[in-house]
Each structure stands twice: as structure tokens, then as C-alpha cells.
Image 1 (cartoon, one colour):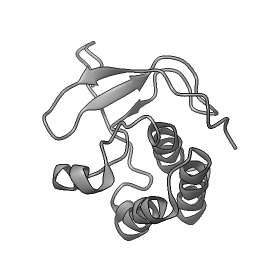
Image 2: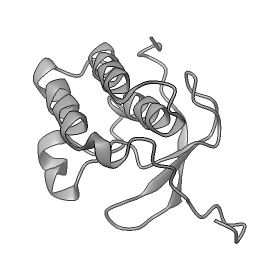
Image 3: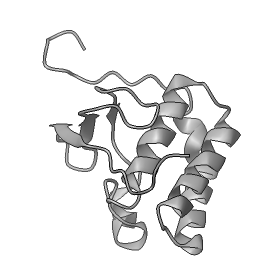
Length: 125
């Protein structure tokens, strides 16, 4: 489990209204520098209920979860369980952590093993 006090250092690389892309500036846990994420994939209309996709308390867990979903090193069920454990370790309350977990269990299949292509500015997505 990661150190809940360590925060990932990210920088915005794409802004698209509801879906913003962030890049990891240095390695975080097992996630390599340069990994791109949208943070916690939360529909904008739920931001007031669940929180921002890049909230300090949840961003580390979201980055690790995205990494496991894209890397495929864990099953979806294992990645979702680790996401919940990371949220709790970061101090997210039980109810809110369960809402995040329920969201990934219900809709995570849409993104599991998805290999996004992000424009890195070099002209060859």
C-alpha cells in the first residue's frame, strides 16, 4: 500500500471541458512518470455530490486505479478492491469510498484494459 501522505505531482496536458487530462510528473507508487489520467472518472453532474476528479484526497487512488485498469496487471475486481483500500488509507470516509467503489464496479467495464490515445503534442497521437 502506498504512503497516504505522499501526493502525486501532476500537470494538466489537455483541457476539454468535462474531461481534462493530467500527466504524472514523477513516478508515483508503481505508476511511471508520464502516465496520463483524467483522475477519478466522475461525470460532471456528480462533482458536487462525489467531488472533483483531481481532489487531493482521492487523486492518488484514482491514478493507481487508472494504471491498473490500463496496465492489466490486476483483474478488474482486484484493481477495484485496491482502489477502495487506497481511498480509505487516504482518509476518505466509508460512505464516500463505497460510492467510488460502486461506481467502478458498475461502470468500470467500460474502461478496463482501455488503452487511451492522448495527444502529446508531437503530432502522432
